[in-house]
Image (cartoon, rainbow, N blue to C red):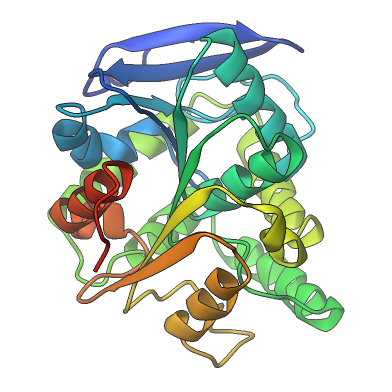
Length: 291
């Protein structure tokens, strides 16, 4: 794809099986390779603040998931399994070793799905406000789908994107406007209704391909980070629990996981609290105690 926007680091491309061409940034070096996976309707540069610091200690690779950012726009059957396959084939294509998967939001559920399906592809896991730890009943799903249809009826893709991103921050930052501007520019390159089909398929897949009951299969050492003021997890329309209760319940099911709750930040904690997130990731990968 023509580079409509300029990424903060050089952009590389690799062809995967099934006409799946992935764009990615690759910076730094070290004994560990951190493979960053962005969330729904996002792109690799959301990890910019993390790569800036962590590339001094680790090899940092941030990918654009298929259909997102500067990756291809083929008519894929978007699902958690599809994304997980893409992550696995990406690791194989680049012959990556000593990998730590790092996923944000939907990217966290993708990382979990990847390790459940391909348990030997990574040695460590970092989950940043991950989807997949919240349980949805059949009634929850029906209500959620109805809400999505109503929201789409009274809004458009750009408004939906801005509303969701703004809700991801505890304190709105001017830098969020830059992310919205770039994602909107990318959105305008999509074929008719492609973007909405990808979003709807991805959301449905998150609900229909849950990982909660399989979390005990993830035996890699795992760092789970949540913002105490996360406005997206749990889903406020359906559930009345707290972010911390969701996080603790999920982490308890994972044999080698540790949870850190960060104050004064929301769902986009790797941006709002980048220095703290980076410090926890570095300590985690260096085998230091996590507080």
